[in-house]
Amino acid sequence: MKKVFTVLALSVLLISLSSNSSQAQFSLRVGPQAGLNFNIQSGSDVTETTNGFGALIGAQVDMNFTPVIGLMANMQFYDNRYASYSVDATTDNGTPYTETLGFSMAYFMIEPLFKVTVPNSNFFFFIGPSLGFPVQSSWEDKVTSSSANVTFGDGATKHTGTIRNTSTRFEMKLGSGIDINLGGVILAPQFSFGYGLSNIVEDSEAKILTFQLLSTVKFPL
Image 1 (cartoon, rainbow, N blue to C red):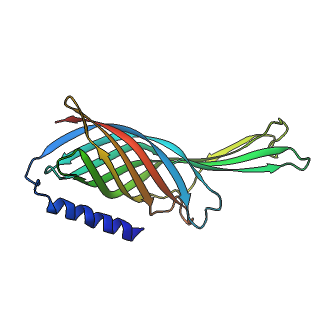
Image 2: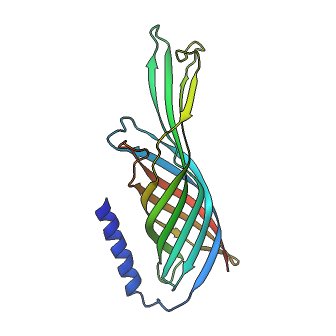
Image 3: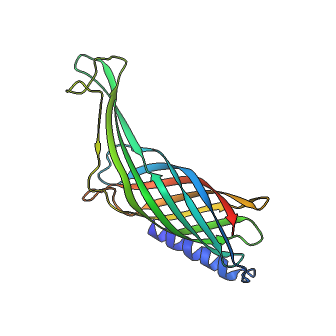
């Protein structure tokens, strides 16, 4: 996977250097962004198919140094990487039930992303690191059944708690987007993949891979 990111980064750099449109033309835009994550947990300590959706909200600074080369700086104030898995089972008397274990990790994310715009178009690609600081981490274990008699040993149907020893998140992100001009304001839908390089918690081989869809409304300065 690291080799794939390296090849893609070199390809993007070669495209930018070979363009004849790289005349100095600095522009700066800022604006809010919001989106949705589809998260997949992976690693040797992940024994079940664990995935889920989470929301994000933040802001972006978009700097174009030339018509081709630029830098996007994302600051996501709340970036949720929720994932869960479910197991179907039956009680000793044959009553079916489902147990669902969910993990909710939210981060404050900082993302300096190298941006390359396709010459003579509004399409762009970006690549770079993401650094996330945990702001919320919790787990939930619940049972659901058509019978009200299915509970945990203490009579409850749901247990919750805090995930301890969460790690600072580090990932590599690669994606693309398009700038849509709406009369001076730019709407920029973007799709990306984030490959988690750090473990979710210390001393655990479990990482998060994320497919992200977001939109940014950018205002010129």
